[in-house]
Structures are given as structure tokens and as C-alpha cells.
Length: 316
Image (cartoon, rainbow, N blue to C red):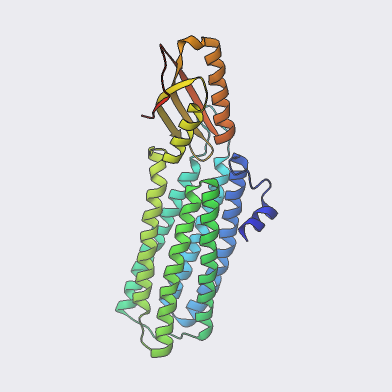
């Protein structure tokens, strides 16, 4: 399903390493999230008001916050594609991380408000009017949210997006919370026992938990977290695969947002190779890193006296 949608709406969708394709996939995901979550909000809010259920209304508000989050995601991917300028020589790709942080703040605010209203519902319970149609709407919501989880997770892995991975986590939590709401409605429908306020509180706590988790995942790259070990190994292997390279050390990787990865490394060459030959090798390796891995690599030339040596790698 996802592949078919990408084929229809995103040009050159298989070239996920291209910053333009990365942005196009992100914007497409944002639009999809807006449409699905807005429809779910309208359905649940209508059913929740008719049934007088705080749990269903809480779930509807959660979907509304998800729709707002998708708007932020859409804007984040669009602004992240602004070219480098005098004040931002490494581009604006980190805006995507800021967008993810904004999403988490919205989720936390929605969760806090729902805690308040759910506690009020527990202290002052009101009669519910749960119908079978309300349960059907909730079941459809679970199916849609489960698809969105798979959709966002797949696209997040495809383009390496923290924001889309956060959206996937949020969708997964929505499935869990809606299951709780559905259980609460079924309990009321078959036993006439009102646990609506308690279910609403559980939903609110899940929302807050997901907001905190998303905030952590977006703040970490902004603070300069260690590069992924797989990326470190790939860069090292690429450099060491060149026949003239004897070893590497002090590999440093800087993440300025998706598609804006910069790295520097000291590469050892034999003095017997000659400066010009080593310079050509350096140019070739730097070009390969950019073309094959979309990494802007800067190599520092380290000439060493050698007899017979084995290639070595010291990545720190």
C-alpha cells in the first residue's frame, strides 16, 4: 500500500538519499497524517458528544493534536529544505528536529488538559449513552491508526527521519489508548458500569508518556548525539577500501539534519606514494562518500614512514 502511494505521489521515491526526495516523502507523510487524523477527530468528537463520553472526547482531542502535529511535520520538512545562507552555512535541515520537538510539546499540553478533565469526570461521573455505532467507530479508528503506525514507521526508516519515527510511536500509542477507550465503552454497554473517567485518565497518561518519549528522541540530535554505529562503520569501510590508505583515526561525524551529514577524518598514507597521488586518492574518497552515502567528508592527509604495514582503523 505504502509503495503504491509513494509511486503515485512522490517522484523518484526510491532515491531516499536525495534531500529533495527526502523532503517530498516527509511532506507526503504530513499531508496523509493531516487527512486521516482530521477525519478521526470529527468522527470521535461527534460520537463522544452524543454519548457524553469523556474517554471518547479525550481520544478525539488526541487525534486533533495528531492532526496539528502533522501540520508541523509538513511545515518542518518544507522549511528544512531552505538552502544554506550566510547565517546558516550548513543549511536548515535541523528544522526537522525542531518540528519533532514542537510535536512533542503539543502532545504534552493535550495530555495535561485531558488529565484535568478526566479527574473531574471521576469526581463527578455523568450517565453515558454508548451505542453499538460508537464502538464501531472506535474499531475503525484502531484499524486506521494501526495502518498509520506501519506507514510512518516504514517511511521513517526509509528516509531516516526522527520526526516520522516520532509520528509512528504516537500512532502506535493511539492504537493502545483507543483500545482502552473501546474496552471502557463495551464495559458500559454490557454492564452499565461507568469507568469512563478512569479510561480517560489512562488515555491522557499514555499521551503524556508518548510526548516525553518523542521529546527525548528529538532533543538528542539537537544536542549533538553520537553518530549511528552503522554509519561510522560504513564510512570507515569506504575509506579503508582504497588501496593507498594505510589507516584512519579521529573520525568525527556532525549531524546538521537529514541529508546534511558532515565528517572529518585523518587518513594515513605512505610517504612513498607521493603527495599528488595521495591528493587524488583523497579527492576520490571524498567524492565516493558524497555520492554513495550523502556524507560531506573532509580528509586530513597524514603521511607516515612505512615498511610493510597492515591497514588499521581508530575511529576515535
